[in-house]
Image (tube, rainbow, N blue to C red):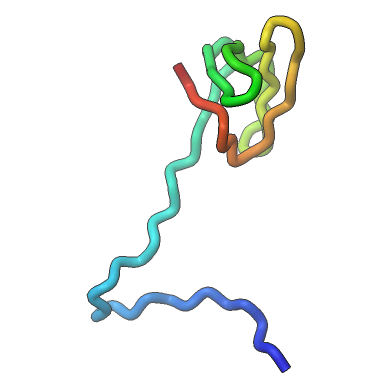
Length: 73
């Protein structure tokens, strides 16, 4: 019998720091961006917290959150 996966809360007296969530990336329409696979592009649509639509010139792609390979320029 296995126990369900539960995240443990760090103790306040623990010498180890609690894991910090990375800051959320935010994009606006018109931003220039770069993607590790598709290259340079411009944001044409934003679904807040869900996805962004980016025009890479020859194609448009919907990049979903957490936007691991997408970077603002």
